[in-house]
Image 1 (cartoon, rainbow, N blue to C red):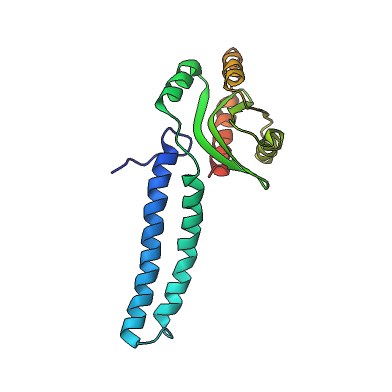
Image 2: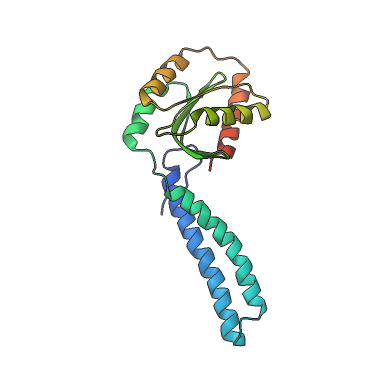
Length: 189
């Protein structure tokens, strides 16, 4: 059995793929079983169990959408994790974050935060400026002014991590760090 992973940790997507697939299968099987039980016992589909089965399809369908979203992405490889962990020092890193905006879903293999600066690596194309604005607005709603920068190139991201390590840390940052991490995890799938 796989061990449960928290949002922002290595292997989170792998765990969610497994969990949402099992949950979806069980929810659909339960709805189908209720329908079959009602039909077998009454000989018609006009019964209370049919209504319950149809209502049971709502959470099953929601679970299926969630499963499809996770099946689109892969967990970050162990080699990349090791590379980021070597560069980390005392930065806060989040892995395997899937953020959605009104226009698009983004896979961010790694995000780094320190001293009101949030940066992330986002391979592929897309409206990265829109994602930066989305994250900036989300932090403003939590009353934390944060500079957000999303990098499409991993080398630029690693350079930014190195420069973030030299920043001085204020006493208030520990409180803000917890707020920023909680906000990012709430925004992520």
